Length: 171
Image 1 (cartoon, rainbow, N blue to C red):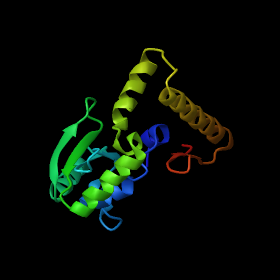
Image 2 (cartoon, helix red, strand yellow):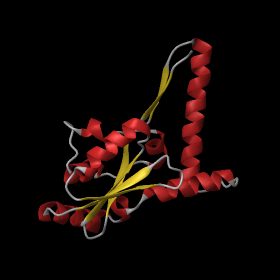
Image 3 (cartoon, rainbow, N blue to C red):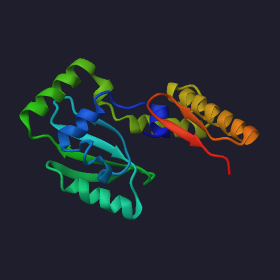
Image 4 (cartoon, rainbow, N blue to C red):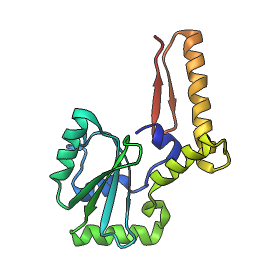
């Protein structure tokens, strides 16, 4: 996972959303840097947030576009991230996603990327009050502490929240 995930978390059914569009452990590498996903309330559409660019990004987009149900790839405003949209045509998958949406609500249907963008704008404006801003500052403090320790002892250190990790390697 990534720094994005250390700050924002990820959808608890993300791996199932990926499986629903045809991304599995055996083939996930060809899709690049997958960050998060969400599903519509009716289970009919899945959105996958990814961070792919350059030549590797072109290869990942080609792989996405060959999956059944691929609709589009839309770059986010900063062009660092993009969102792939998929129609879910398998009725069992659609039913399972709708059930998850009914039971878990915003936890599986929310586009967390918008909260991420809002958090960055809030921090730029000096507002540190949102839960996401507080989490970003806490993660940042952990990373800074690990960098200081790495400088002091000359050893690599890892900041790990159980889902994502950042490796600090002394030069």
